[in-house]
Image 1 (cartoon, rainbow, N blue to C red):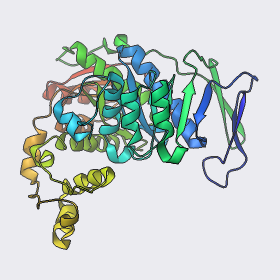
Image 2 (cartoon, rainbow, N blue to C red; image 1 turned 60 degrees about the vertical axis):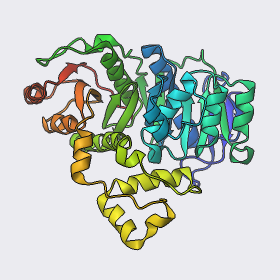
Image 3 (cartoon, helix red, strand yellow; image 1 turned 180 degrees about the vertical axis):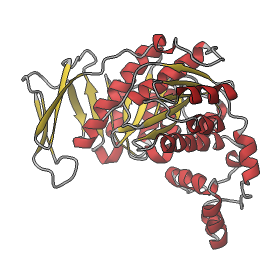
Length: 392
C-alpha cells in the first residue's frame, strides 16, 4: 500500500487528506488497529525517529510520549526506584526495561501526556502493553508487538485504539520536501549523528562531565532534535524531566522547562508522597489534584470551597514555599540541552535553580563570555556543540 486516506487533515474542515509515497513505493507502516489521523501520524513518525535515535545513541530501549508534534516526555529503559514507581502510578505492575522507558516518558509530565501518541524503540511486550492499556492515549507506534501485547492494546478505546507497526529497516530519502502556501520547500534531512563527539568542546572551568551525564546530555539533544523550536530540555537519570518547546523567547523556554522539572522533583517530596486520595478517584484526577496541591493559590481555593473532601481522605497541610525551596535544593546533577545558543546568562541562573550542573548548547552568541562566566559562578560544566537543532 503506497497511500492511506485520512478522515481529515489538521482540522476537520481540511479535506481531502491522505498520506502517500511520491515514488510509488510501499508506505513504511502497517496499521494493525484503529484509524490514525493526520496529527496522529505526525506524532508517530516524529516519535519513532526520536526513540530510534535514542536507542542508537545510548544502547538502551527507549520510549517517548508525543503531543502536538513535540515530545511531552522521553526516556531510556533504566530501572525505576520505588519512589519513581509510586509517582508514576506503576508500583503495582511488572516492569520490563521497555515498560520502564514508557513509565519514565509518561511520568515526567503526566498532565501534558494525557491523550498522547506513544513511540517505542523495541517490540512492545506485555508489561508495556498493560501499562499503556490503563492510560488515556491516542495510539502507539513500534517495530512490532508480541501476540499477547497486541490483543491487550486492541482492547483499548472499545477496540478503536490506534496501533501502528513500522518497518524498522525503512530509510527515507536524503532530501525532504513540504509545501507551505502552495510553495515547495526542499532541504537535506537532518541526519547529523548525536554522539559524544559533540560534547568535547567544554568551555567552562569545570571540564568534568561523567559518562552518565554525557548520556543524559545526548538524550536532551536528541529530544530537542524532534521538538518544535525554541526548545530547552532538562534531563536526569535517563529521562527528560522538563521540556520547554516553541517559545519565542529563550528565557521563557528555560523557565517553562525548569518549572516542569521542578514539579517532577516536587512530586517526589514527602508532602506529595504522603497525600491520601479517595479510593474511587481516577488517575487523571489524581494528577490534576497534585498539580493543584503544589499551586498555593489554587489549593487555597480548594480548601476554602471544601472541595478537598472529594479528593483526599484527610485534609493535606499546605506545602509551604519554604518547604518547597528546601526540597528543590536537594535536586542536583541535572543536565540541560538547548537547541540554540543562550543569548544571556539569565538562562543559566534559571537553570541553576533547578539543579542543572551540566549543559550542552551550540554556542555562538556575542555574549558567550557572559554565559560562560555565569556557569563558572556555579561550577557548571558546559559544552559548546557547534550545532543547532531547530525543528519546524
